[in-house]
Every structure is written in C-alpha cells, then in structure tokens.
Image (cartoon, rainbow, N blue to C red; front, side, top):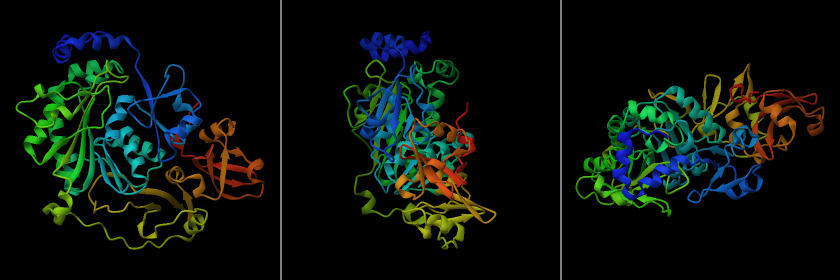
Length: 469
C-alpha cells in the first residue's frame, strides 16, 4: 500500500524500532468483528447459537471475530433481531472502557452510526437515559434505526451542534463518550479511501474541532462524572495534546487508568509540553501490536468522586426542570393491546403527540427548542382510532413480555419471507380462528409484529427495514 511520505516519516519518528512491524501489518488482511447485544443475551449464550464460526476478541467481553470473506452476518435473521452489531474490533474499545451502569445519564456526543451508542444503551439495561447525538440529521436517522434494532427505548436521539446541546444539559451527565471526528490514520488498512481524505483534511484541521468538542462536553459532565475521549488516529495533535488542552482549561479533570490489555501502548509523555499528570495512562492501539485497527483512548473524571454529592453547582440550580407531564388519557384500543403485554405500563411516562404514543425516559429536562428525531420509546400510533404497535416496541420487548407469539426457527423459510414483508401462512402455528396482533420471533428473539386472521399473518415489518432481494 502506498502511504503518503510525510505520514510514513511521522510514524517512523513515533514508532522508531517498531516502524517496520507497523508497515508490515498493511500486508495483512483487515479484521472483521461483531459485538453481542447483552441487552438480549450474553456473549456465552450467543456463542452457543451462532450459526457461523467466531472467536473471542480477547480485550472485549462481548466481542467476536468472524471471517468476513466467508460469511455475511448482516444477512442472517439474528442480525435483524438485534443480537449483534458489526463493528471493527478496536472500535469496540471506547464504549467497553467507559464504566456505564444502569440508571446513569449518558451522552454519546458524536454517535452515528451507532456502534458505541448501542453498547452504551445496552449496558443501561433500560434504566437511566442515553442521549445519542449527531450533528447530521441524515446520519442521525441511521443512528436511530440501529438503536431501535437493539431494543433501546430510554433514549433521546438528537441532531444538534454540541454548543446548542450544552445549553440544555449543563452539568447533567454522569458519563460522556466523545468518539471525535478525526483524520482517520488508524483506519488506513481497513479503508484505503481514508488516505485521500487525510490528504485533503489532516490532523491540524481536526484538532481544532476536537478542542472545541472536548470543552463543550466537559461543561455537560456532572462533577464526579466520567468522560472517555477517543479517536481512530495516531497524531499527537488529535490525541495527547487534546487531553492536555482540556486539563489546561479545566484543571479539575484528572486522567484515570484504563482497564488494561497486553497489546495496549501507553500515551506518550513526549507528545505534550510540560508534565501532564497521568498522560501515560491514556491508551494507544497500534495494528501491529493487536488484531485490530488504530485507536486512541483517554478516560477522565471531573473532580473527585465525592464532588457530585458535596456541592450543588450553579448549573444544577439553573438547569431547566423536567417537564411536568399531565397523565395522558390513554385510548381504549391501546389499553386493550397492552393487556397482552406482561410487563408493567408506566402510565405517568406516556406521552401522546399527534397520533403517536411514546414511553418517555425518566429525568429528561425541558428540551423544547432542541432538534431531535426521537424521545423515548415509540409504542405505536393510532390509525382511525385503532392502535398499531410500532417496530421499535417489538424490538424492545422480549418473547416472554407478550402473550401472543409466533416463534420460528431460523431455518424456517417463513423467517426470510417475513423480513421481506410478505404475508405468511401460519395456520399450523396459531389455527385458522386466531386474530389480533402477534409478535413474530426467530428462535425466541422478536423481529416485529403481524396481524393474524383466517390462518394468515398480515406483515407489519417496517418497510424501511426489510431485507432486499
């Protein structure tokens, strides 16, 4: 592979005796990975049912390698059931090293297409709030789909400038992930078009953006909260020097050690001016030392651990209060539908906007004026006073949450027909007289809804999600 000479010289200075091993890795094939959705099943459970060969990514507890030249996991029904996300192995690292817990308020600032947001949302376990933001509304649409496929409902998907987002969420979040736009040097082997992009917009261009992003995110983080900054580049101007810029502006931040792995390289002290405490605890991932592409990570805490409990900040006092919702008057047809759902209905969190019903996340502040694609879980919509459940609800449910299911094995040809939007013959499963909404599952994992009548199932799989061909 022909790399720009100025880039090669920079890497030679950075890696010294490791440079030849780094250049040699460009002759090796790229690695393909998938990350299991632990909201739906454990990594061990997935490994037992996985229909193609996988092997664990050693530093990611729910990550696996697969042979991308031999299999197409994106065409298997389990992909449509949201059991896994296809992601380059090193790119799994940032979300895995931000210690998100159920109940946290989490921000993924540059979230599209959703690889990291889906992992953060899965680890919330339905509690707390995930704000997944991307400045591009077109990219945010793909982000929303991936979040809904994963069954994540406690979410706000926004498409705002981070500076605008900051106005709504001052010192609000417990955890923030910034997978910053960067020059992409770590992805040259995976995507050779990145070399041309690097020549057009190099590290200097992106470092100015990154400095702005990290300071904006810092102001949205609670005292005592944690933030993970990451890039897929090697340049110190986008990595260690961005962290030094944050610490120089907000000295209350401190660098934390990252859960180790033998292939990780330490952050470089020589890349920053002065003594930046803890810079060696940031992590560099080089493709010649690990089976993955290039990355950089830094984990930081705002103040000490007890800061959040010890002081009520001015930002806390001026933060917009959560909108006080009137208890919605729920349509009778919706109540009848929910009788088939075995989990509790949080009526105080239901909001009706137009003909659509949403279950809102807890703790969301007043966001009037914010640009967003989704708040909460879309339960469904009223069509001529009839309630029609949504695709998002189907993916959020588990098989045991709904009392009328059609569960097909992955080998049944009706699974693919369902994913293509076709009407199914299901008399052998539910009888000719069965009526109403059925949750269609593959091997126990929901795919979507269908409406039964006279032994057939009218397909309600979302048209924009359908399997082509």
